[in-house]
Length: 257
Image (cartoon, rainbow, N blue to C red):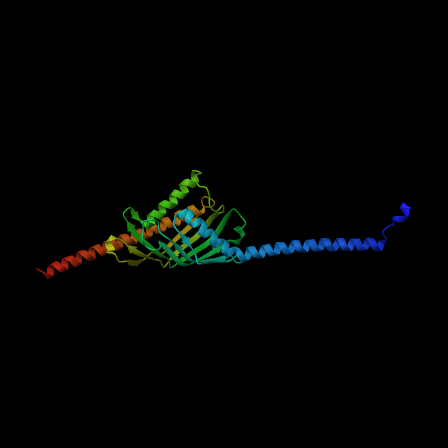
């Protein structure tokens, strides 16, 4: 009786089972492929917003001032990108709206390095930035930000920084700051803002000797160069304004002789 109830699967039945199994496997593989593809599409389409979020997260941690960008455009396929509307605020105690503004920063990246621990950036061009130099009772705003960067790096090296910042290191072959200007607001400008051009800067091989520099170390080098260049311009302006004021006073005295 029991044997009579058991029946062998015919070749046709076995073929049907194999077809169903194969279809199930193919469907599973297809779903997996679509899921991976969808994830890659999402990641690729989100690179711009992810980069912007990273700038606005780590920028304030390193500089201790507000950092905002209006947009980031990346083209990983050809290794090019732009950062638009970068704006750095000022430390507490300073009244001007910003310390640094740049309408556009262009990047050229070695795409082969994107998956490595050290990302190589062939060129950075900061075009027509606007720097604001404001003096206060304890110094100027640009040097205050430089001290903030040094403080961040000091905590990092001592292991006292909770968030160590971006894990990737950077090498920048060439960094250009072109056609910039500085707005000077100090006691010798008598409450008015005086503007002057900043000499073009070209920094080479940032992080090259150490096989990569952290974001904080890059900020230290770039901001330090900008502070030194701007400081020279401000010093020259101060001397010119003082000489002009002195000449005006002497001219006035002669009128009343």
